[in-house]
Amino acid sequence: MHLPGHPHVAYRDGQLHLDELALDELGARFGTPLYAYSRRAMLAALAPYQRALASRDHLICYAMKANSNLAVLQTFAQAGCGFDIVSGGELERVLAAGGDASKVVFSGLGKTRAEMARALEVGVHCFNVESEAELEVLSEVARAHGRRAPVSLRVNPDVDAKTHPYISTGLKGNKFGVAHDRALHAYRRAAELPGLEVIGIDCHIGSQITEADPYLDAIDRVLDLVEAIESHGLRIAHLDLGGGLGITYTDEVPPAADVLIERMLQRIDARGHGHRAIVLEPGRSLVGNSGVLLTEVLYLKPGEAKNFCVVDAAMNDLMRPAMYEALMAIVPTSLRDAAPSTYDVVGPICESGDWLGRDRALAVRPGDRLAVLSAGAYGMSMASNYNTRGRAAEVLVDGDQAWLIRDREDPRALFAGEHLLPR
Image 1 (cartoon, rainbow, N blue to C red):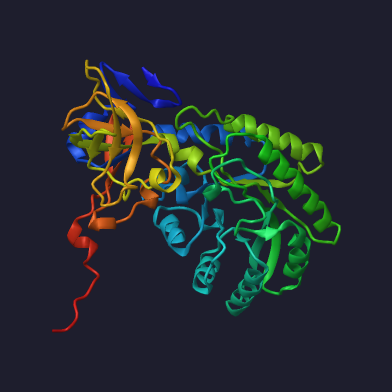
Image 2: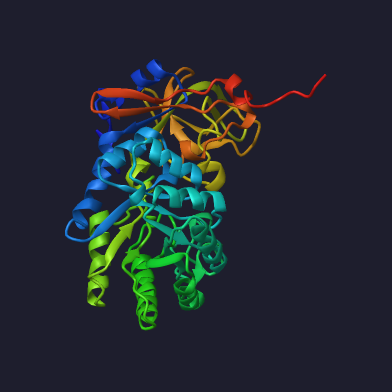
């Protein structure tokens, strides 16, 4: 029995499986909390992007902030992807995983001079510039290193992505990008700067988007700008349309990636821009439903107003519920023939905001394991060491094989770089 929206997660004989492996067995083997990802699920999610763009000059850049484990990056690099990065640290991860620097787009609105210099040194494909001030600094850095930096400007189209305010990035009140009405001026300035080469235009309106219309609205706004920019003698070689396509966490029904891309390409072609290369930056939609967070039930704590299911995973392991009030499915790894009770699933951290799920019907006992679904994106990548808790181990599954791809952190390693004062 496959779970809706999670084709690589299924119950077989009462045991929850990821691909061909029982999650209870993974928990026993590697311990909990444990992130487990399906490599097959990642590649299956990538396939419709590749299929829809096969006849176009294109670059699919995995937005690695969603999940930056080296084995995950290796999987996408081997599948032909580039990478969307937002820091110098992410660039070093791409290189360590065998990624091609010439397929990297460097996004982010706070790039340092050192990060710019390193990206120029290894030859990234493009800098997605987010302010006019950044143009000036990047030109200076490029000239100092005897280079010309390839740039696109991230334009803020003031389009409502209809998603959570914290992950909506395309409205005029957001911190990201160059304002739509300043974009032409910024492009003309970029063309004047000796250390820059204008090659594209970039737009990213948010994350966990479940409708096509915001994308189409943004495309129209971007193409209006392209036409205005090129009327002043500049050339825009590529359209970077960002990412942000949502996934099914509970009952969301986002458009299929290939269907959405086909509609986007139709809009682009209808306006006479079909000759331009296309760059896309999917993240969550490639890895979100590939992963689960396994956790063990420690205690069942009844109360007058609430019953609590206390587990060994916490907000430091999975921040999304505490930060976004995100609703993520939580299911037992082994089905019991018993009536469920209603619990808030909470962790051990000393915060009332430390919860993974509220009002969940579960038939569980201490020692059982639970799986938090759709945990492949913004789970481990946002994890912390709050309360001096070591971060979880990570496992990559492919069919009936599993590889440990990150060790569980030892608490002593967490303060290995700290120093006591002299006595």
